[in-house]
Length: 421
Image (tube, rainbow, N blue to C red; front, side, top):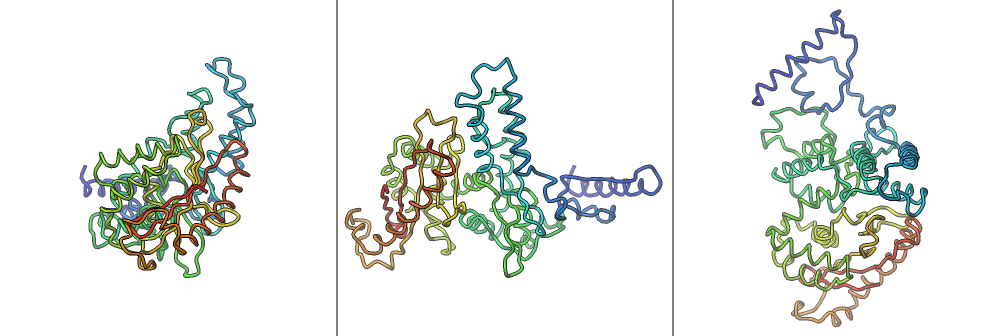
């Protein structure tokens, strides 16, 4: 059915439902999964619906609260304990340790959605939560290889749709680096015509589209009165990262080689090959039109494109801590600790080349660059921040993590320095 035909069908269908409420046996209707695209194009056929999704009393209707998650984990653990058909011990380190691991995983992967600007109530993504419980049941309490429901991979197509619009790539990059955008308002309705015509693709449209498709959620209230939207959690951010990786490293073979070097870093602690790959293969071809994004967040984005690994890690990027924002923490998943992956914390810094009076920058040794005052200042700041963040991560995850911290300092797009702290 073409778009025009579908449009007409929907109008007729909902007009029939409206007619049925006029003494023909239909008293009430409750609709879920209704996008503003649908709402706009059925208006002439059905104009008696009320959107309740932003009302404070319904803020947690389409997700699980933190209290509910803890309760569900308890119920699930109790049910596993009574099963006699398990192929392996489900609680090798004890039931409480297992429950704590599952809870920390969900907090760091599935939490973060907000749907009402009138109350601060965060919820967990129910699709991802139920996916994990189903996998745990089928795998006798063991974690699945991926924390992402494959049904959500279609969301990558929504990112590509936005990226192909005028200004779309810049918006996606801004989201990934700052994790938020601000738009004048969330569009309550937009129709098929808006989806087709490029002139209708404003930032309000793009932000609203990603919000309704589950790729963004409500952020904080900002002084301007505009609506802040944010990426809800690391699992959703991984979809953005996978798309961006294909933009900045276009050749698939080169990209695969970069993944290989990243694996050497996470398994063996060898960061030099990864640094060399970025300097020689990524920096020379990196052509970002919007110079606003050329900073330490750009360096971090490049690293995340290569290091993104939800199969082995909890990826924690720019999460607010008691003392600020940790740049990038990679905490080994509890089921992957026997494979010798490293717990990693990286602090990223950036120095503009125009701020250094150094000739032939590419030919300078690491040692000579580390002697520069500007580099020493950045290193000192990174060391101080990493020390604070490392303590907070150890407090959260316990003595099981063996954290290795690094400072990575980009000098323009010419040199990349690293130091194990």
